[in-house]
Each structure stands twice: as C-alpha cells, then as structure tokens.
Amino acid sequence: MEDKEKLIGMYASLSSEAVRWGMSPYTKEVIERWLSNLQNLIVLVALYDDKIVGHAQIFKFPHPRRKGACDLAIYLHQDFHNVGLGTAILTKLIELAKKERLHRIGLSVIADSKLAVHLYQKLGFKIEGVMKDAYLGEDGKYHDEIVMGLILANSTSPS
Image 1: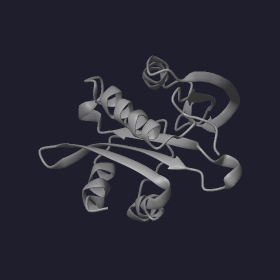
Image 2: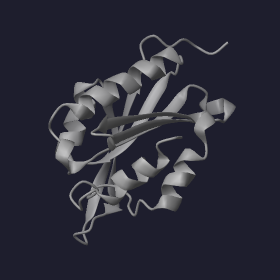
Image 3: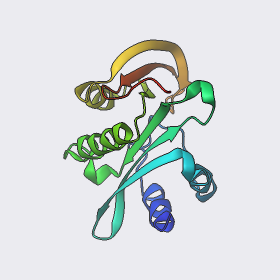
Image 4: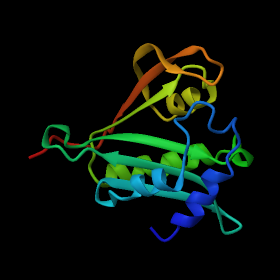
C-alpha cells in the first residue's frame, strides 16, 4: 500500500478520545501487520490536504467455512468526527463488499461508543448480541461489547 507512511502518520496523530474504545497502541508494526494480508482485505482511506484522515477496512476470512464472511474496522481522525465521513467511507466499503459478492460483514463495538453504534445501525447493521464486561476501558472499568452484523442483500450462496 503506497499510503502506508501516511496511514502510520494518521494513527500517530489520533487523540486519546479518537482511540478511546479501540485496541491501541497503533504502532508501525501493528499497521504493517494489518496490511501484510492485502489479498484478504478491502481497504479504503480518506484524504484531506494529502493526509489520511480516515481508514476503514474489511478483512475477508480465508477459511472455506467462513467464505463470504468478513469483519469491519474503521478509524477517523478526531478533526473529522461528526461531519459525515464515517457514513461516506462505510457506504463505499459496503458497496465494494457487495461487488465482491461477500455475504456478511461483522463487527464489534463498545456499547458506550454511542455515535459508532448509531452509525452502524443507520447503515443497516443489526445488534446480534452483547458480550458483558468484555472490554477493560482506560477508566479501569469493564464495558460491554456489542456484536453487530449486516447481511448483504445482493449476495448469493456460494457455488
């Protein structure tokens, strides 16, 4: 990925609030590990003034029993929260997943991340379950993690 250094720069510039409910630290090694499996990824970045300000990706599970199933991750620079970027980048990512005839996109989100939960629901993701006290927050307390999924309408059964 040509923009790897820009992506590393975005993660380095994220505020503690922007990664509050994530699984930081997002080091160069972590980002390189994410991108080392490009054949199983759909990656989108959002650029502003030649800087990456948003990153979203779908990881396509390679095992035959998970064919068509994938997981989603998204991060936006704090200066671009609540401006429609999350909706735009996820809408495009869902469109690309449909073009690849993927069947299901899954994700997990911390229940306290209300804006993220709202965004996912707005795009059609359904709550499939709650994992109680699954995430130890920076506040030293455990928080619930919500499992969500989206079945892609145009997908078909594998042949």
